[in-house]
Image 1 (cartoon, rainbow, N blue to C red):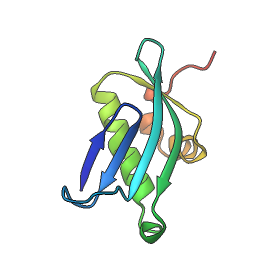
Image 2 (image 1 turned 90 degrees about the vertical axis):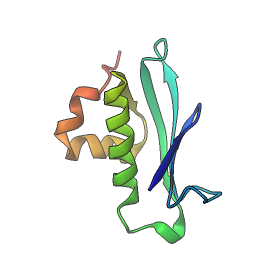
Image 3 (image 1 turned 90 degrees about the horizontal axis):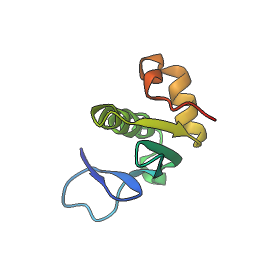
Length: 96
């Protein structure tokens, strides 16, 4: 597994030589770059049903925790992930 950050995405590749990701989390930073607003999670059609959305979400959240930042999940998948995985709830940003 190979992941890559960009200004607005966290992408999962099966190998470093891959040109296109097989899973993707789209986000934007707010609150003086302290909060990730997760806008969507996507998995390529041919890779669905393998649990990649959960894998990439765990990887993303582990890196967010290492950065000591928070997450505001607008994405329905990410919201559901937080509900099913209470060990990550400390990363939730408080909604105003």
